[in-house]
Length: 225
Image (cartoon, rainbow, N blue to C red; front, side, top):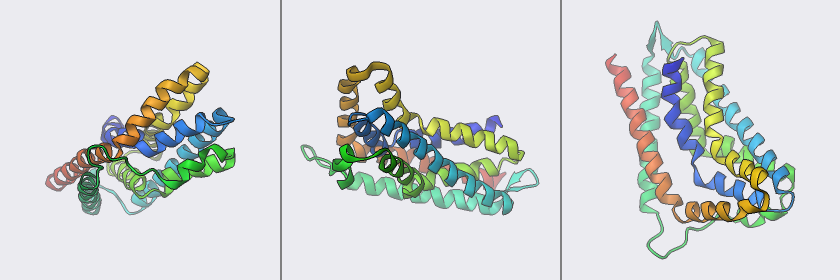
């Protein structure tokens, strides 16, 4: 079980520091009834991430990701493909980064966050975790990494829960900070939001490159075992 947690830890950290969901959480907690909307956002985020992870984990188990104590060939091939895709994403993000003095364009829905109801906030949280292709790639990779270790079903669920908890730290932190500090949280949260908005492309490029290379390495190691 410890090996599986170690395998998914980098993936969980990568999900946790994705800029766009964190920016959305900061905007929500800074709006009217922000704590309620922020809580709804985080809960739906965790549910969406859990749903993707659980579905891929079930499919991987059914397909036999662990072959007599060793990762199945198809699982290693899938990790290799996911790793290459993430490296390609990294290159795309890096090449598309704003130049010095340019502003990163913000998604249009962010300007409407102040008018979000808790239900819309929950919908945004679910969409950003379960329907975002980049998040889905990382959650799927984590599920395959868990499945190929050969754990019991209960242990797999435990590792998946650890993955979701760590991956949710980024969006949970603004809500916790707002609850703990109240209005005093505005300045540090605005600083975080501004930094992530300015450096979104660079952060994503570095994350995708590191995780992509890690997955390729895991796949190559699996082929040679």
